Image 1 (cartoon, rainbow, N blue to C red):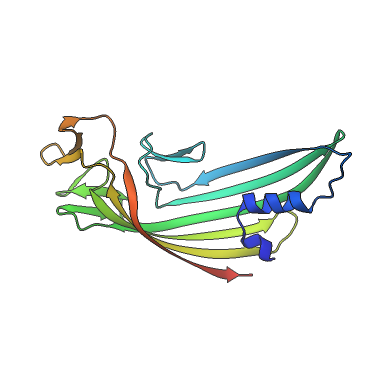
Image 2 (tube, helix red, strand yellow):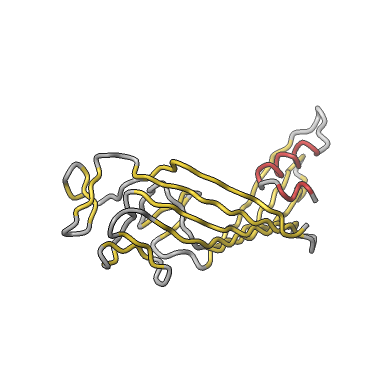
Length: 199
């Protein structure tokens, strides 16, 4: 059961190492991953394992989502296909934002940032993101599972001083000009704690 605590790609590598490989045999490996999101925070999407906010990569990940992932690894040897492992993972994330930026606040009711009591599209210059993610991992053929709780606190800051906030129109400017893009952010401080809920 200890292996269940490891990420999928580590488990896949371990499976390959444990396979009996001889000098006369050649193996072709295939990995099929089926990922489905529910309750995803609005304006967010994931494409090619990258998070996008309103279609843009801004260096932040959403607060709220539920994700179910099935990972199946097969190995083909001499035209014989063998399913190696099938694993399931369910992730549920929730949390909230805080900021010290003047006139900014985040509403938990409609999961939207506000500036001077008006909803805005974007994030403040700096903010803190606190999330709790519950991860449940199991093998497809087994009813046993491991449940883990990840608590993360991340402090973000805008990545470039060329961005400025226009108070009147409540939009971000790049080099004092309107831009169709949003600023990108970087993590300046991060703290994470993990605890196993069920073994």
